[in-house]
Length: 376
Ligand code: 1QQ
Image 1 (cartoon, rainbow, N blue to C red):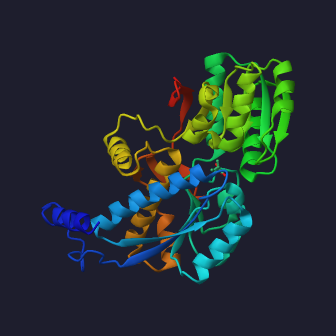
Image 2 (image 1 turned 90 degrees about the horizontal axis):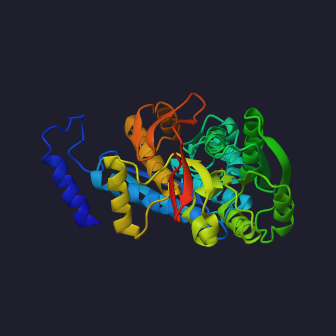
């Protein structure tokens, strides 16, 4: 890592077009060290989300530190997807570690639990995967670069409807997960707006493993598609069971579907699963392809949406720190983040709107031959 730092510092020095930006720019780390807390779902049933987020952040961290304008110190806390753990992590990061900002938590439900505390403490917090309705309504210090379900789900449903001439659908959602409940409400509204008939709405809970009752009922009603709002663990078992009982229609999911772990667990049963995402690793874009190959070299896997959004999030935060001219002032970081309008990330062009939500586009993906591919 030290060799890498020297190499890229030397690279900077030889770049004749590097702007002379004022005092201290000859020194690496001239702005100092920014301590950023990360609250992530690192162990338990949704750990693949958190693992990708951690890898994406570490990738961005090493690139930022190698550039030498400022140094990022990441303090990771495992929330296990639980609200109480997330709250404990937030309190520790704010009061003991004295972080300048927080990235995370992974789940919208966790954000609804920690957001008010962090906001009250005057610490900027940015969700990279919190897609539920109302996340940034928590307060002025709450940001996200996660694509809200209110944008993603209607896009996925419209595309599937055109493609497969859908008329009648069934809905399923986890009723003890804030993200899934919110996603369900978005699905129900989108289906209504598109004039689709809802044959039935079935519920389950996070950590459930048996979905036969709900799926048997759904299959008997012969839907053209099934819409599922839930995390990958449950969604994968739903797909497996559905295919097992001969329910071979398209399954349209919310953000929970965006982990490759869905495909790993469901295997062939994942074929035909549809989801919208701002991330598509095969995009014909030099920055995306560089990120994919660097990430592959480092972690021996293709970055998923969660890694890509986390990578962009830390770059956005470091850009904001630079603009703020401070690595320790929480208020300055908040105000600076709010001005980010023309960021180009691996998930595309990015800007915060006036409600600190992202303005970005979604691509509709379908699982084909064991991979997410663009649904055209
Ligand atoms: C949320 C989500 C989850 C799927 C993140 C892992 O989108 O909780 O908002």
